[in-house]
Length: 219
Image (cartoon, rainbow, N blue to C red; front, side, top):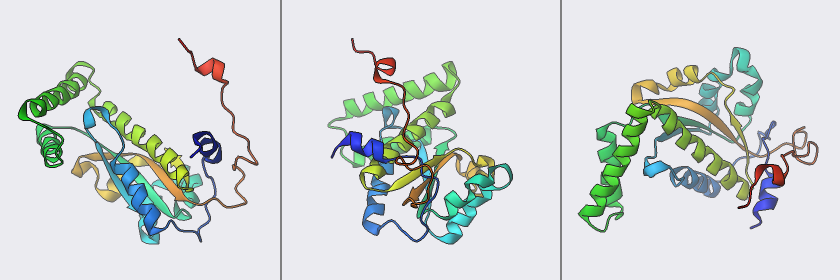
């Protein structure tokens, strides 16, 4: 695998081929990318709504009406569309749920380490809850980290993607009852395969990045 080649191959796909679908085998790997993404203190403050049917994608397009209609086709023509949702809180019930799952997965060799990790996770969460007063924003950062992880991972699978914030997230929250479940939509990623007519493919619209010497400092 050549990471540089993959990075130059991937781009924000503007036009999906609606006749091409992600295989079941590749979709399993997509789900693994979502579940196995890193997060601060392993807090995993996310939920994902994945639409692959026309009915499911139609529900997501309710967030692409009016001002956001330029993204409607990018949802409808994609193979799969993922709504990235962030938790709106991380209360003690959720913290204990995480701890219980980690114990079931054999993460802790002894009770002392288990309690040390539990305490550290709560310290960081409370720091953002009470001191910085940005707990939800902190959790949303973890969701965006997941999104970046997904974009590179699917590119390695030869799957195109388009991350989007240009949707009415409140409308999506209401459509899926997210706020009542303790979540809110923060972004959407469409997955599928590019059309040859897409103006934004790297061969038609070359990538542009700031030079290495400007963005990297070696010390």
